[in-house]
Image (tube, rainbow, N blue to C red; front, side, top):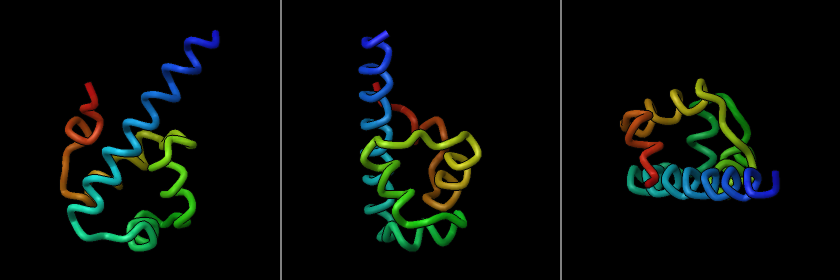
Length: 77
């Protein structure tokens, strides 16, 4: 059970780092991304730090705004 939590946490952190990299490469602030997906800036920060798991719909919206496929956004390993 604890191992599952550790794996999930690891994955979420890697996903968050990947989102941050694409966002920064596009020159988009967390606030701007949040506005474009109709969310709060602190929610984007939580995703990027791996504290919250985005839904597939949120991943779709983020990937569309960042101009990258969901597959590429979630390609972590």
